[in-house]
Image 1: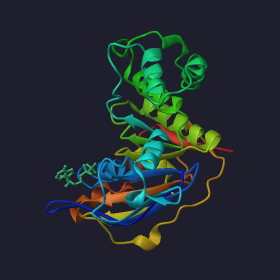
Image 2 (image 1 turned 60 degrees about the vertical axis):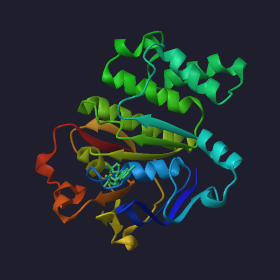
Image 3 (image 1 turned 135 degrees about the horizontal axis):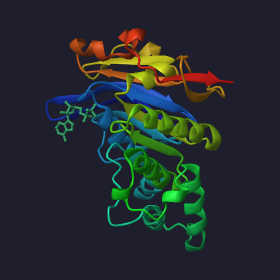
Image 4 (image 1 turned 180 degrees about the vertical axis):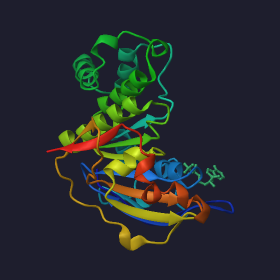
Length: 276
Ligand code: ADP
């Protein structure tokens, strides 16, 4: 999906959640949004989902400004977006297959193709042997992969992953990010992921946009770059990959959270290495 924020600000009453944010993604791009709690990450996702409107600025999706788009267009765009949540948000009294089927039903996916589509995505996230289990019978990593399968099922042009690794151990976190990377490369699905996971961000970092107190102070650093075909695997040594990061800093005190300042010695043993 082609998406751009042009000088977007969002205030909730007297609270400036976002101030003058600009960025752009193209099909297949993988964009990280990082920043401390309250920096405005969820606000960006809600704006993309059109759950809230910007106070000023424009959000353009596939060359159409959302503020002037017709209801039909907005509904169509919404159907092209899959969402993955930190707490999975699977329906507890439905098994994994049924959870995915429901998502397909909601978008009126052709009935005769639903079984085949479920089969495809369940295999894609390696949950074939778990398809008839209920969420309570799955591990955190499995639940998050089920949630990814549900998001993928609708053949989205954009996946919004809101802190998807927040409840996962390092190995499952990396497995999930690897899956997301493969999806963005294989299917040209764009991915926007918010995260607190500095290891993942450090290992994949390339360009950074730094925002302080919700204000973009360094817009010239925004650069969406061509991706290469590096494949991430869990290995011993980190290597920088080509991804884009928006770093939201609530205030100057939070700069210790910034990926740039994270010292290598603090990394755990689980790292990403590029495999050409
Ligand atoms: P993050 O996702 O990075 O934690 P949010 O986007 O949730 O940050 O919030 C950004 C700022 O906007 C915070 O200061 C938060 O308190 C404020 N905010 C978010 N939603 C609302 C709301 N509905 N009403 C008032 N203030 C809000």
